[in-house]
Length: 112
Length: 117
Image (cartoon, rainbow over all chains, first blue to last red; front, side, top):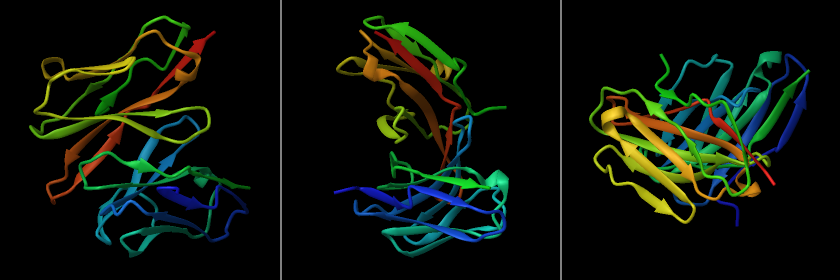
């Protein structure tokens, strides 16, 4: 069974569209994250939720909105997609806020 | 200034060579956590090790070993007798308290290790 799963794995869309990436973890972890990895492999945290509560909200355009319906899910919705949003987005979870993260397989978003 | 510096952008070795990946971090906290992750060509991110700031014991796991030195703010990673399967991008990360009861992780820019047969 996949511990952290995110869908879709690939997403190609046009500028201006709205899209969502879903993430689910079956590890019983309290904390979930969204990371963005750019073309140079730089990994940057975007958001973190602990027990469904937003605890980290880095400098991210407000076109990006996370939603956590329950502890096991953290979805990412992106409005008005721009070319610069093209990247790999990783969902992750951890037992607590200071423990190691387990990552999903990533979603490669390409905006054309 | 970067909080986590991985000065080696790319390292190329021949199989069976030992290789050390450097990581230097910067923090004013007394309690923090350090991590190493591996990202093979397939793209997934795999956790390797976690260290808290109060535990300076070095660790060995098979061919992997880690050297944590607070005096130099370094957390270096050595692979002994490297293998082609070790080819990957390796990330060092630092987790610091936010002051609101949470911790924020910061990743280094990664070191790409290429092991040639």
